[in-house]
Amino acid sequence: MIVKRKYELSEEELMTLIFMAASRVCDKQELDERDQMEICENAGSIAMELISHLNGEGPFDPTEMEIADKMINGVL
Image 1 (tube, rainbow, N blue to C red):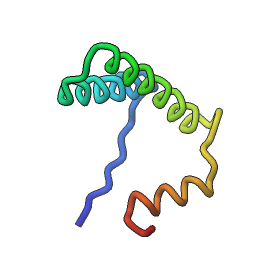
Image 2 (cartoon, helix red, strand yellow):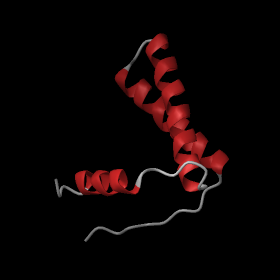
Image 3 (cartoon, rainbow, N blue to C red):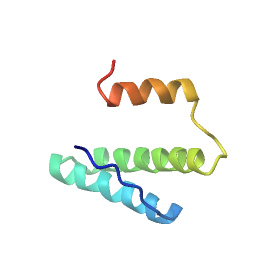
């Protein structure tokens, strides 16, 4: 059985975690500095989109959310 957990994070903590995850992926893949910078910039953009969705300023499309959920959970 998969346990679903909920977390309470500040926007700053969320940004930091996303950036650190991107940095870790770069290190594991031994990417050059240019690629690392691009990935970290994209991680910042992703973090901002996620925060915008979570705070209601720019919510994701509900239909797209449903499709993404089905894809992630192996329904599609």
